[in-house]
Image (cartoon, rainbow, N blue to C red; front, side):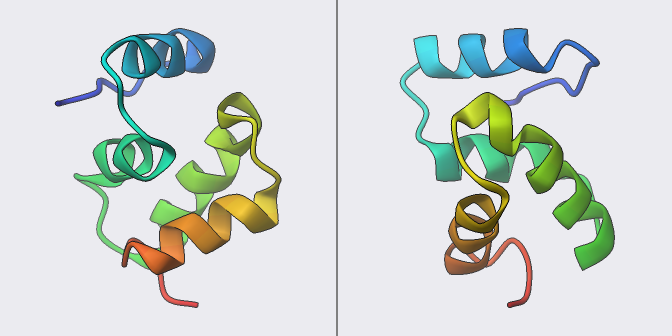
Length: 70
């Protein structure tokens, strides 16, 4: 599934959840077109609260799925 990055973070997460996406799948979709750990990490941290995750938990999910380096 492709998620369009918009300023309405809550709506993005709501749509993704309605499609049954996990936290990992949502983060993968959000950072799909970003190249570089810095940009990817910013997106992960920005969306962490909307996913119900702490920043540390979001980092861990992203690192385990290969989206960012530890």
